[in-house]
Length: 347
Image (cartoon, rainbow, N blue to C red; front, side):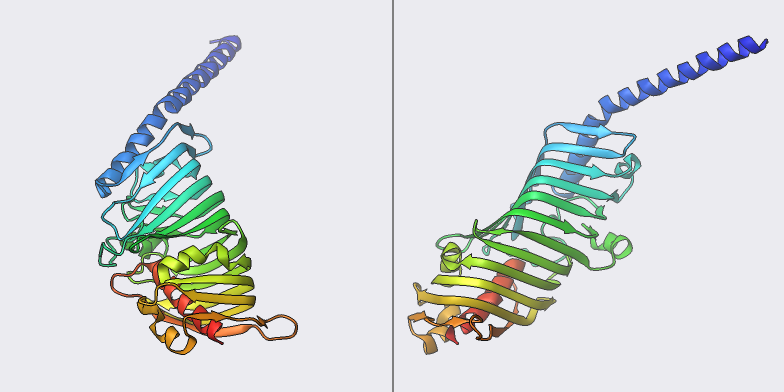
């Protein structure tokens, strides 16, 4: 074979390989979305038959190891005490394709844009607070190394009777460190506490910051949490405390912060606040959470003075409590904070 023949063979061979690879990539791009969608839906249904999952278009970039889900929707098992609903305009996953074949599936990075996340706690359902039924337990064995959300919302709903209480966080930007959906894989892949940070707006008024280090699979709740809220008119959150605690609030918080530890459901920490014109009115005196408060405060209490401004020290009270056997994680935190806030108002 002459040098020319070798050169032609090399050129045509290279072109042939390139065309084959191009066709293969096109084929993978066509087949991968439906394969991935079926894989994910099947995995979730196998783990949680009563969970619901829907998605629009699926985009796959094979060479970059990136998968994007448009119009993604997930509903947790309705039998869970704490039920999660997630709707995202776009979820982008960074992971190697082989990760979707192996178990557990390892997600290097998950980015969510315009995610609507709702957590509904139903006191009428007792799921036992064990490792088999925390929120999102319907997901298959997954390891998340990093999560970030942008321009999203978090809606907390507590189905207390006779009316449900609700708290809304919007314009949420946050990050979540490594965590796993199963204890048996968490011990190997994500043994350290999960780091969480989020900022946003509370009830379209005050600005909040949340920083936490938590064990997301703790049966009763284990975490170290810092929460700070600035420039919050209390009328904006009064309806929430009306249904939760039977009280109405008024006044303005310039800044309120709390640092506490929750260890296996036991809460211990401090609440500090700078405020003006705080007021509380008891609407439901039968509320069990108000009994001790009413003994010393009466039915109405208005703090005419300011606290923590014009040279006065901020108000400070201990935050203590323990999660009840049928109480949700967030409900337990709000109950402890509510008790500390009442003591703060009382002086």
